[in-house]
Image 1 (tube, rainbow, N blue to C red):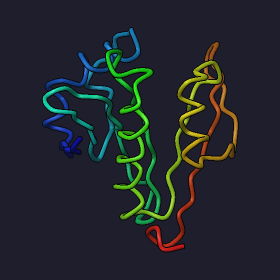
Image 2: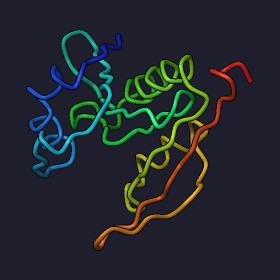
Image 3: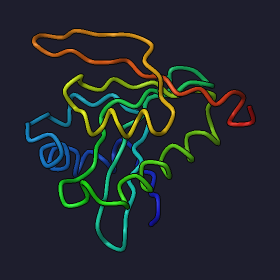
Image 4: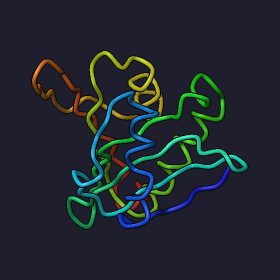
Length: 141
């Protein structure tokens, strides 16, 4: 597996297609406000991705992301997720994200990685758990 970092411009060309494949819904690329995207690849197949936005020099927000359907329920999905988090751990003290309360598989993955619930958000008919993973000073603690 390998990790590739994409600029917002690079991501723009595939953002709509990948979001549709992961979430089964259309989300226009013009909505994105990201600093960069990380994608985990196995051979020539993308396993999963995270869109990222820096909150400050020590904090990163994981906006959208997910595991592509062909990689779900595969041991590589957890390894890929941990690879993404290891990249973030080297650069930030903490990561936050929102995961819908009914997305049990993603919540399990996040809890297994060490995220804890730090809040609750409601939007339209959706309820999201706010999750935070603290590493300390760029992963040294």
